Amino acid sequence: MKKSILSATVILTFVIYVVATLTKSTVIAPVGDKTPPVQSTPSQSAAYKDGTYTGDSIDVYYGNVQVQVDVQNGKFSDVTVLDHPKDRDTSVSIYEYAAPKLKSEAIAAQSAQIDAVSGATATSGGFIKSLASALAKAKN
Image (cartoon, rainbow, N blue to C red; front, side, top):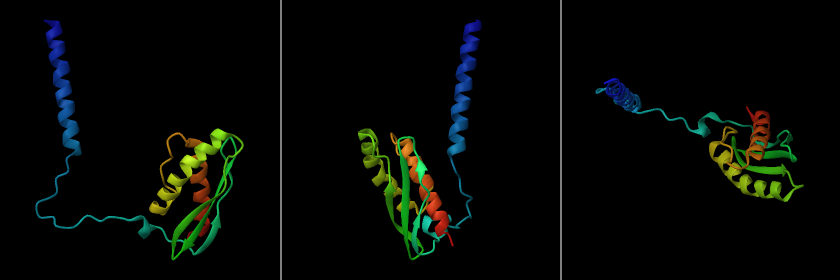
């Protein structure tokens, strides 16, 4: 008898949890609301002074990462890696794998608020910190 009550309680708790989870993720718009959602794009929030800006050199354990950004018309159009770990073959291969992904994501986001590349955590962190320091210098 105790086992069946315990089982029923566990099942009921699970059902309540599932219903509560599904209810939270469902968004219902008011019937008369025809206001379009406001979407913020990275280019709206990022305004940089034109020029070339060099970020800080960041130590990433097996070497340093340092980037430079080129800003044209208030947006950065290119990110150049000036320094990266190159003493070990593994470090070089990690950099070669991560750098293109980090560059393209940063340019698309027009920000240093980008995700790290899996398997290149230290290199990604150095890239992001160096990029953030360069962009801080370029801010209007």
